[in-house]
Image (cartoon, rainbow, N blue to C red; front, side):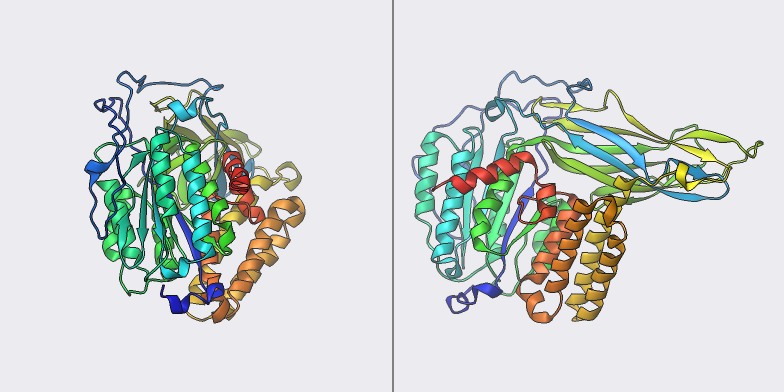
Length: 532
């Protein structure tokens, strides 16, 4: 962004774009051990799309790691648990029924005391806008936030700083964040200066080079991009999309908020809109808290209709996580790249239950409609868990008798998650009309859902009030072209993503706070005191 545009700060979007990339896994066989190299004597600086992976510090890998591919944890020790429930416990056998069901994944909030020594070490690339619009308080707040990140990382984590204005620069290689290198990071951060224009594409290309050209890898890879505005150079990011899919990350900016949000959705990245730049440290801290608390990755949820059941089909999975349903509609798989300690995912799906012939008009049978299991890579144990010791099953009562509603109460938790899903869907649909300038239709979509949610508010006031708060905020930001283009677009897409993936780095709104894990909250709290 050029200097003459920098005064109109209120109309610019600050976007923190975070992603946790597909983890590097050892597949039961550890990579060859590497010797630790001495910290680099100096931090190279250069301009252009060039990366020199030979400058990176090699990671230190235990020559005798404990890897057990067939490990099976007990209920008291497993990192992930699963439960199944449905809207109703009783379904009529008189005609075909569609039943909304929910699989809830919950991770243990346990993090080993020695996690910094044995846990989920990360390779993190920070891609930072240092164009002229970042001058003054912005660059100072950015430096303070970067210092916090450096102070919190462990000696086995690696960090790379990439900056961009008109050009892209790799300020540091991927260096282990040990005491010697921390001093180098702090010096590099002090030396940051804001000038020239903005070319986000060059920064992204260089950041991708750093990650894709690594000769050694930590188990977790993270990329964070921060930009406060638009490219000075009109360009398409289409040529980056395939590389982004390879690296599995999402990013965003004001100028390309929709385009970049779509990448984030496809790759489970997180697009965070910083509407006040003072929030930058809190957002960075929450993101870091997520990275250091990853407990498992490459999570696969398997849904299966039991072989003995002939009248049940899985018809739809209501999730933006990668999912597939087999052609025979008897099984489905939902894939989640990673889960944090103390995190919960409520995943909705629909089963179709066909009527079956019975000889007794009053017959009621117990029907097991779904079996569920989970596989994942346990970061702290360094092993692949192929099955839970106690998988979950969903059973209902299938009856030909008339069902008394008082005997078949609706499951309020499933309905809550239904409206969480509908909120995300409505915000995105309204945004599509706002993009076309049809703000009246956008308002109608949002307000209709608000009215519907109000009918359920008494069942869970705190939960539904959070959805109503979000919808009201989005309605204001999609009321006209000025507010929508000034930040409404980015805010709408952020809230869509937050509700879709049930994840947030911050606690700025009630819904964001509900998705933020305890570890992310602790890091955000520590960041508030840092530097004071």
